[in-house]
Image (cartoon, rainbow, N blue to C red; front, side, top):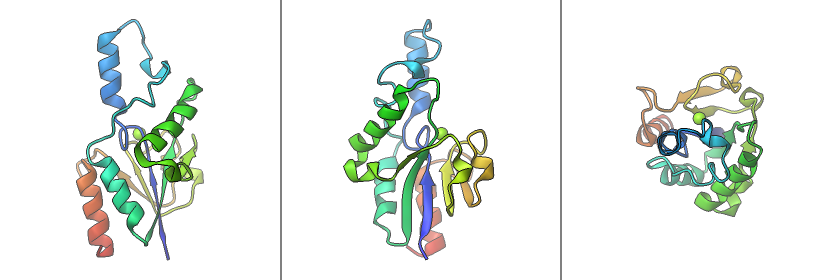
Amino acid sequence: MKKTIYLDMDDVLCDFTAAYKTAIKANPAIQYPQSQFDYFRKLAPIKDAIASVNYLLQQPLFEVYILTAPSIQNPLCYTEKRLWVEDHFGFEMVKRLIISPHKGLNRGDYLIDDNDSGKGQENFEGQLLKFGSPEFPNWKTVISFFQEKYQL
Ligand SMILES: [Mg+2]
């Protein structure tokens, strides 16, 4: 039986916080830099994220999806998140992009997310791997978890 893994985007696949800090410093007058055109598309990938996701995609045991909540005040983000996925993973991965402000409605085994509540993470029935926590500080620890658990 395949295991379904959902991946958050901001601060798991793409470095939202670094871009936010840089933008606030560069232009303090813009209080919400995430409301600006192309903000989401230009985010840099988190270290090891791309290679780690490609690794998970190659495992026959796993079904991998991106599950990201939109910044609902910024309608552009829906398009920019879709473009970011194609930019970094190619078009096929776009079929695995789910944009939802209610992550708990998705059924699956794992959710890799830096937040454990706020966008329905608290209602997710599977296991939450809290990215950035002491247990999963980076992608290497996430991949090690799956390798040990499933003898990959
Ligand atoms: Mg996040």
